[in-house]
Length: 103
Image (cartoon, rainbow, N blue to C red; front, side, top):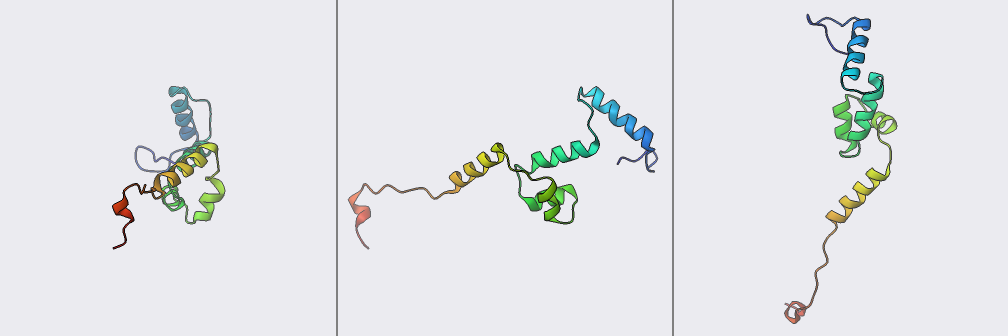
């Protein structure tokens, strides 16, 4: 995943050790990099569209993103409903008689 200090592929054992050291320093329980990647993209899926998530994750197809990273949740449902509410046309109150006159 990360290159060595001279730009070559990092040794798997050293890479794994550095990953574990990073998790320990951050006081995070052990997760594989795949789990962390999936968590990050799943969280990102709540705040952006599938096409942007596809580009950000490096996948070639939106269907991969939708299958593996985009999951419904109460948070995403609330965000979607709030977005709909904010973009809904506002009702205009007709209280003034001059607004009722036909031109």
